[in-house]
Length: 197
Image (cartoon, rainbow, N blue to C red; front, side, top):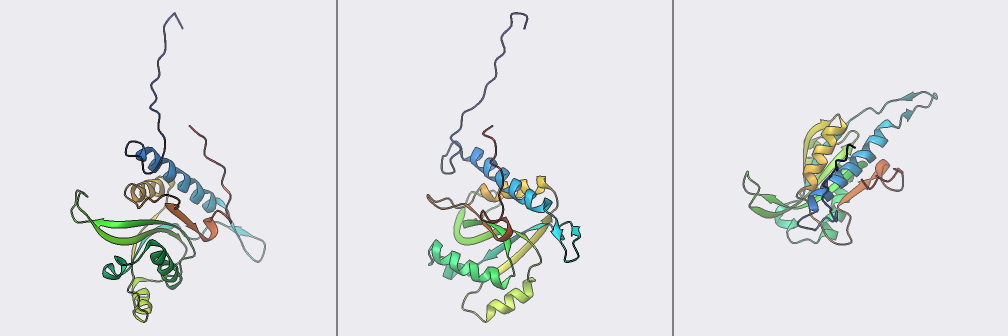
């Protein structure tokens, strides 16, 4: 208008998880997808036997499941996943999204990683408490531990948490970085595709 030009800069991105330049846009996009999936699940009311409907009873909670580091370092990702399925049953976790971390950090600045495979889960529902989980796992050959964190009550908390988990997760070709289990799985919950922009 008024013979003036308008210029708008926009950075192009490949949105690929293993790209050193664009991984940050991939992290945000994947966190947004997961948040949309969880939000849709939370909006679906629970139907009671008498025909009434109620809102969901719990909020999603952040949980970390860690195998014994000395044993886990010798295991493949496939073996770790198989053991995780057993740990999820013991913990009574049925609906969750799971993010794998192959290492932890030795310093506060998160610059010195060391091998320590563990799984971060964003979980819905009542889960086994820490002591009970430890006692049940003591009778098996796997020494898994469970750590409970705060529940996430808003979409912003959920997005921030998942974005943080994806910022330093394990990425491998032909493997999903985020796994959805139970009622939020691809098979059980259909979510519209996110727009390109």
